[in-house]
Amino acid sequence: MPLFEVRGLTHFFGGLKAVSDFNLTSDGGELMGLIGPNGAGKTTVFNLVCGVYHPSHGEVRIEGRNLGRLYPHQVTAMGIARTFQNIRLWPEMTVLDNVRVCHNYRLGYRFLDTIFQTSRYRTSEKGIGRMAREVLEIMGLWDQAQELAKNLPYGLQRKVEIARALILRPKLLLLDEPSAGMNLGEKEALIGLIRWIRKEFNLTIWLIEHEMRVVMNLCERIQVLDFGQTIAQGTPEEIQGNPRVVEAYLGKEID
Amino acid sequence: MMRQYRLTILTVLFFVLVVGLSWTGTLSSYVQLVLMFVGVNIMMSSSLNLVNGYMGEFSCGHAGFMAVGAYTASLVSVWCFTAGSVFGPNLLPPAWAVVLFPFILLLGSLVAALAGLLVAIPSFRTRGDYLAIITLAVNYIVKSAIENIQPIGGARGFMGMARVVNGMKEVADIPWMMIWTWIFVFLTVLLIKRFVSSTYGKGIIAIREDEIAAEIMGVNTRRAKMVAFMLSSGLAGLAGGLFAHILGYINPGSFGIMKSTEALVMVYLGGMGSLSGSVLSAVLFTLLLEILRPLQLYKWVVVPFILILLMLFRTEGLLGHRELTDVLPGLKRIFGAREEVHAAL
Image 1 (tube, each protein chain N blue to C red):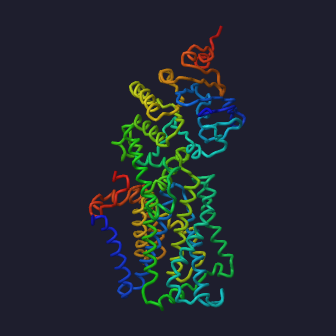
Image 2 (image 1 turned 45 degrees about the vertical axis):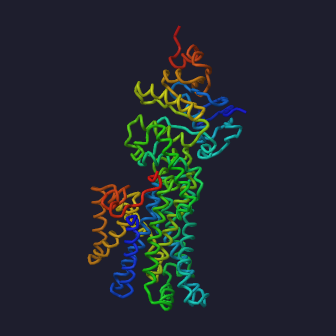
């Protein structure tokens, strides 16, 4: 049974076919890339997988279970976490709270426990604090734990987003343009970080990326979208040599 | 170690002082009344802050829930403990009110929390301005519904709660309403404080900051909204029950949009998402209205004008997203506000 399987995923926005017949199977442990020109439908695919939209046709399965029409927080509970193209941290909350809130779907206590501060509540909150600290230390963010997220520099905000996704303990991690807005040095560091995360947390990572240096360096398998259609898939070498990909990105030469 | 109990000790001292001075009659009944309204307003503003400040939705029908709580608690207590034309002879001996009174208030609060579903369920699909309109509509629905139920007085209002309180006074001559008001004020503030500092409650703040991100990051936003709205309206209902028994007379007119606006003003005066701000502003606002009472109708020119000045020069309210201990760090030293669980790590 594959870890992650997308079959015949199709989605319409009104009359517009944003994604058409998208297929992907992964046995896990891979680093996959999803590329394509602007407006190709890459983020829509991610949104369909996360349950933000429900697909018009097709299905998404993780560990054999169909995600069907689950709400995003239920999809998260099944082991899919993501980051966003434009950073979506909770700006007025501290970095620590940003990470802590992600425990919400597996609290281990109920509303009344918070009011009476039962032992169940205290044990659970202590555990949450410990795990949050662990992740922040691993990501080198512990020194900023009490800062408001909005006060962090851009590169660190990206890191907090990844930390936030990691604390959800996903099996599949979706990264939506992780290197957007980073400079060359930060991009190099990001490549190292993503590789290291995959090994350390034993994850399957699927990323959308415009920066070819990052994609070609990182991904073992790449799928190319154009106008919602998959126009190519294969190893980075195969993709680089594919005339349809070159055409989608650069346009057709006039004879 | 003693330090973290200072706030508790101070609270108890305040309580003993207020109740004691009311009991001996040192405080005139007017001052007592104002003190009790301060308490009710603290409950109104801090419970509204849960929705408007912490969750970032705009509820402008808070008085509707107060009305539900006030009427439920009043009807039950009058039905149980007094003989009258509406319900016939009393169901239980009036002396039992001493024990049952808080439970009746809680019942009113429960019914108000259920009424909160009227707003909570639409909030799954709409937000912002549109939800604000819905809260306004709920306020009008409650008010008009009560106005049209003739057996409980309709627009003329409902009374008899004073006899229930007098029944309690016959058992023991202590300032019952002062005691219960402030006990419930402390419980309300404690409850909200504990809720918003838990990981559960922080999910609600995450909804304010970015709802879609909250949902994707594992927060069950529907349940969180439902909890927040029901908690907020339930506490407003509790305040309503107390308000009804303090005054001894309620009419639907006193739970209109004006009352909701007062609650809103207190929240924005104190600062969104600041619990100590809500408490502080409720005290200031209630006292200000009393101090300006000699101005009579002009009071309603002066007070809104002060509000305009505040919004111009201090948009975030008195405290705004911060607690009193953040603004005056000295307080932290004195009271040693107990740090959250994670700080112990």
